[in-house]
Image (cartoon, rainbow, N blue to C red):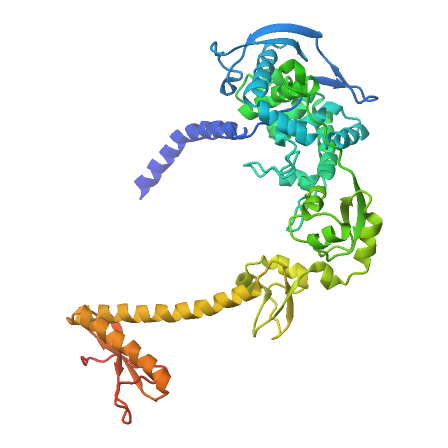
Length: 516
């Protein structure tokens, strides 16, 4: 034992430096997020914002003409690929950095060639949100070019969901969204609300710019998180995004984010220059705001407002259920413009149960919300919010519990009846298999065992029809192995000619050494 301890101490002294180096380098790699080639993400470059204006003053030498070789997307900040030539004219730059010129040119080619139809669809989709977003950015004294951040983040899709679970047009992660007062729960996800998420994004971008003093780094931090950018700047000993992009301290996605944003901004500003037709200008979103008392189903709201469910959801994309949140005193809802008075007249004169469109269900003995939720496949916390009962609370028999309007109560009642029948058939199959196993151990042919089991089932059916009484004796028989098996023995009734089993449950006796 003494020698083993000495050997352990020697190995510890020898391996400690090696383990320390391995831990350092593994942490260094983990500081950068995994590259996600499926997401097209982007952001802003070196821009100086005057505190008294909302326009950008770009650090550039004006309009220039460059002939550069465009690299495929997977080789940005890597080796050039001479097989893809592309000439960019009048490229507006924010600095004289060669890497910036090359990478922005590459994404101009990427968007105007490979992604042309998608890029056009994104711009057309976002045109109805742009006036609102520009107004909110101006209120926060931010440059209006930031309205193109959602273009590269989500294509202005309010329902966008990334593999990393970022949600909404501005692609907020849950932790950051909660920090900027966006609600996320079973009923709503305000990351999908274009108005509220734009307010939150404005606050976040303003914080990042105040932190770094550079829009390049602010946007890189928007993509990767300020913690990763801080570590990367410290390790690379630089405060320049383009110098940082040539290192391995930030992920490929973050390296591409700024040039993607620059390219998207250039095309959106001058589409004809890059081979695009003029983009569509959809009607800006316009609506009335009402404050209503729950409960209320979205289908009822649409009917009261004289519109469709799709229209209500397009104005309120944060809603996740069939109704507005039930546990709030008032809910702020958007409805089509010009329908406010007519909507409130209908809403205020409709009973609560009719507005909610819920389905009543009478509880059974020892029911709880958890049992009911499992039975009808409804989230238990949703039932708790609707009915104001605790999930584990035992409810009295015939208590009325309200279920979502889409719940088919009869369907689930039929399913329970089918389940009982299925259990009976399963019991018959298990009985047959058990008889066959016992027969094999006893040296009896399996066909005979199956036949006996079949005769027993027929006897059970006959007993139910004739209502005759019989006795079923169950004994445990010890066969050649040490395991105990149940064998059912049917005893003749004194008054019946056929073998009729009793309706009484079988009695189980302790095993004996006697063979049957």
